[in-house]
Image: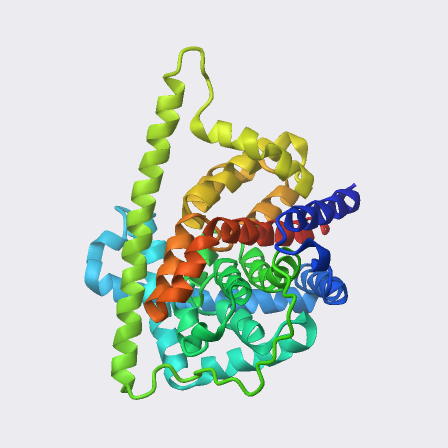
Length: 403
């Protein structure tokens, strides 16, 4: 049954991408690459979930981040002191301390890797490999690798000289890649909230899923020749080591403040809306209940059991209208009551920046580098969220095959 529903899920996702395609006649022009990418997704998921080597790799990454989070706690202890422990002397169960503060330290590590050119070298290498399997030009392939590691704002910096030369179609692909990923700086935060294996699988699957979706929803009816395109792989050029380190630490602090502020605001607003809906005479449904029923058919066609589709739909909608952190916190509350399959699919679905708030972040980031390109991104903002959400759906469907 899982295989049948999985096939239905893939066909359903492809259909949703096709009906929004900018050129339906050539939507499947790269069908060979699409099939190859789907096969790679199955192979990667199988290796991570069903082989000793894959599980060992996941465990090693999880342990590595655990050690890094331990070092982050040392810095937090110096600043916050006894606030980090409860009356029994154990670590306090405070979201700010356990999830957000470590982002600052992880950002510092990323700054060091960027300054030493290690991270740009890795991104460029992965981008080169992707050109061989995706059917996309080098800029799109490079950006896919960069989006997997950098934030949705920072990823465009290395392409700032290319942005004025890119068509609207190519800008859509770059933006979809940025919205369908997460940044390395917050991977550790997700590791503390979700099963690490699903975080890692989601990062890799989204990398492939975004090419599948953009091939269909945003096909290029043009021959793109990038040639020896110049992409900046040393954005920190001219800065000293401590300048770079300080910049990344401050950027990490900004992320903590922004995420914290958004969580306070969104969770409070959801609570208010839930209460307002309950005040309607004869109503026993909250705002999130209604969202769940709206998205329930989508969740079911993805392969989530009907009995759990309403809960899953509510979480999917919560992510779309708020952000991934809010949705994950809601997911944690109900996870134990869901089947292993639904837990796995939702965990993968929630790992991306696909939400309405990201439209402004991406459009603003591009506009800061090239005004006209930023205006183009803003114009296709809704279609961008639609495509990025389909990326998350496809990745979740692939994982569902294995349960």
